[in-house]
Image 1 (cartoon, rainbow, N blue to C red):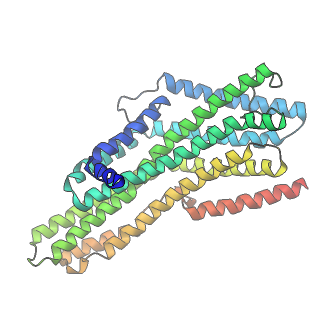
Image 2 (cartoon, rainbow, N blue to C red):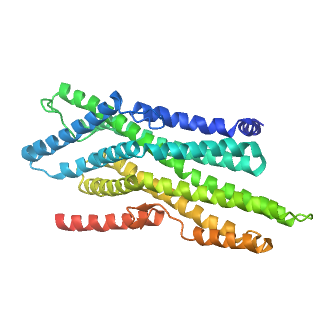
Amino acid sequence: MANDSKVDLLAEQSCLVRYRRILYLVKICAKICGADIADPNYRLNFMTYVLMTMLVIFYCCTVYTIYVTVLRDGTYTIILQATCFVSAGVQSNVKLFCFIAQRFRVREAQTFLDDTYKNYETRGGNYQEVLLQGIAATMKGIKAFGFVYVCVVVACSVYPVIYDALYGEKILIMQFLLPGVDPFTNTGFYMLSVMHVICLCLGAFGNFASDMYFFTFITSVPLLKNILRCKFDDLNRLMNREMQPTRAQVRDAMFDIVSWHKEYLRLLLCTARIFYIIIFAHVLCSAASVVSTLYCMLIGAWPAAPFFLFLSLANLYLYCGLGTVVDKSNEDCTCIIYTSSWYELPVTEQRTVLLMLLKSQCTENLTVASMTPLTVATALNITKTVYSMLMLLMRGRD
């Protein structure tokens, strides 16, 4: 009974209101990071400069840490450990700069999606069900990304305490030092630990905010595809009813379908342009992070490596999985067009359907710098490449 009441309550809520709640959550996270690009009056503000300054300080401290550690201990594994954190920093930089540069396209896409929910929730029936499915998919994705980041931040923050209690050895959360702060003293160690927790939280929060934008756009692609299916279902019912439709009714229905398919293609193109560099940087940095953390695990140089390995693999496969969602939606669009009652349409409308079918078969998918499609198969190929590189590194070590 409780589950039924919950479903009824969700069904009674406005789809537009629920979608705007998601956007409001995204906006708050972006505003904290100084990148509230959804605001038409957005300008670089104090938080933006603070974030950029902290990133510069992080890079400088990382270089300093590598220099000091190599000279003091003569070990080069610190470079691999630092690679993991630098990769996350590079992702943050790229996402911040790309979103600021592409803010006009982001606003255009958000306005279109807002209008979609506003216009189609009033139609009820299958359209409302499709909108609710789109909102549910978006929330699941946001929760999945949030769960990954929260788990890693909590684990990395707590693990040094547990490690110290079990083995009596102090280890740092992140691999960067501050000039003038000695990590071998209690005061210096705790100062660095607090600094590391702050940086870890800010980095995870910033990446999570940008990932929410990505997921909101990507989960809207299946939504638009399902609305296209509903429009073709309406056309099929129109053609199969006992009273034959007029030519004007058929023409208006086809015009509506073609216009919507154009909007679907436009959103795909807009999304591909916004996230073109972001996807490349994300996949490249995630792969580099996987290699470095795995190698550190194999040689036993970094006890906390498994947590960052989990984050890197999760980020890689979540992004590639979303690329597969887009690829599947494009294939479904082709099937929707082909399986419609196009053979019952007048000749002119049949030609229009043929043009739509041709266009749907060469739809642009998300790619990694136009070199390879962003799919789970690509993630598996990257994983195989990482394994080969690790075997090469371990053979060289032997």
